Length: 223
Image 1 (spheres, rainbow, N blue to C red):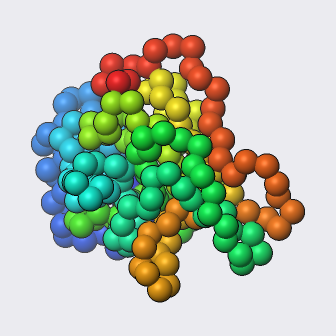
Image 2: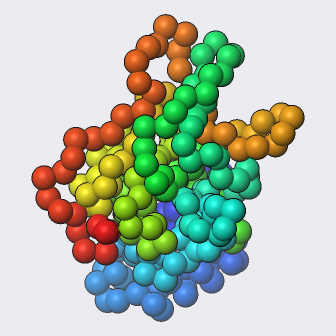
């Protein structure tokens, strides 16, 4: 149960988890049931196919006119930061910078205890420990508008590898930070800001993107 449902390290297996595992098995094909590993992969694939859990409407970040603009996997509800700017924080001081991307679609997630990416939804919290699985969730988000740049604010241990995979799958620019990134709220205004934390002596750009892929991306993920 723990492995298939990607449960957090300290999470207890509940009766609902057992029921969810049974429901997952009923929906799975014989190939998906070949091993616990195959069923764990199907746990992610089903979310893509059915827009459940990570890709449900409830995790969407939206603009003022309700246009989908990203995913918040933190469960904090801090909202959507301004699309054309971010804050670079060094030694406790933050300076606003112009964003290098166009038409961003933002993914925000925190690190899980013991490693991996923690994904918080209204129904469950689970952990994606494999970069390929995380890249699939991001690449096959059907609510991403065509022509959007993909912006990642993921745990530093994951962001570069996931960015490389997503760029190859979607054939879109995928931006990731060169330091830990998060969405934080202004203590006075409550406005959401995308923040990159850099070392005091670190200079140069705060964000980078993999080289443009040579292939046109994969069906269902590319524009």
